[in-house]
Image (cartoon, rainbow, N blue to C red; front, top):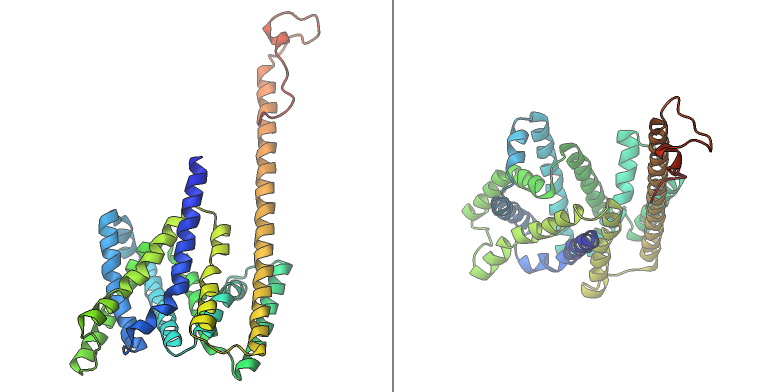
Length: 342
C-alpha cells in the first residue's frame, strides 16, 4: 500500500514538473522590456540563491567536498553550465520572439537527438524500432525545413544543446538540485558582471519594484520544477518519467497555437505529425523492451529459487540413510518440495 502511495506521489510530482515546464512560455513575455540576455542573467543569479536556500533547508552538502576534489567533474560542470546557458537563452529568445511552436519542436525531437548522439558518440547499438524512429525524425526535420523555408534552427539548437547537457550530466552524476547549484555557481559571476555592466550603461530594466520581483522570481521558476522532478525521480521508474516528459512540449505546442496564435500551415502539420509518429515508435519500443526486461528478471529469479531449493533438498539428505517405503524416522515422513513457493 505504501509503495502504491509513493508511486502515486511520484507521478503527481513528475506531472507537475513537466506541466510547469510546459507553461513557462506564458511567463517570459511578462518580463519585457527586458531582453533575452538580461532575463538569462537574472535567471542565473536568482537561481543560485534559491537552490542555496533549498540546500540549507535540506542540509545536503556532502556532495560539495567530493566535487571540489575532482577536477574532471568540475570541468564537466563548467561544460554543462555553458551548454544549458545556450539552451536557456535560446528558449527565452524564441518565446519572446513569437517562436513558441518551433521551440516546442526542439523538445519533441530531443529524445531522437539523444539516441542519435548515443550512437555517434558512445557507440551504442539501436534496435530496429529505434532506427525507424530516428529515420522518421530526420524526414520530419527535412519536411519542416521545406515548410519554414529554412532548417528549424531554433528547434535543432534547443534539441542538441539539451541532449549534450544530458550527456554531460550523466558523466557528472549529481542529483538535480546539486547539479543546478554547481552549474549556477559557475554562471553566477559572469551573469552578475553582465547585470552590473547593463546598470552602468543605464540599460538595466531592473527598475520598478513589480518588474524587479518578476525578474527575481526567475529563480523560483527554474528551481521549483526541478525540485518536483527530483521528488518524482526517486519514486517512479524511468520509463514512467520518459512518458511524462512529453507533457512539456505538448503544453508548449498548445500554447503556441491557442494562446500565441502562431501560424501552422499544412507542411508544418505534416512535419509535426512525422515527429509524433517517431516518438510513438520510440515509446512503443521502450515499453516493449521494459516489459521483456521485467519478464526476464522474473524468470531468472524463479530459476534461482528452484536451484536454491534443489541444493537445500540435497543438503537435507544424509548419506547412508535408506529412502525406501519401509524406512522409519522423521526424514522419511517429510514431504518433498515440488516447486518454488510463491
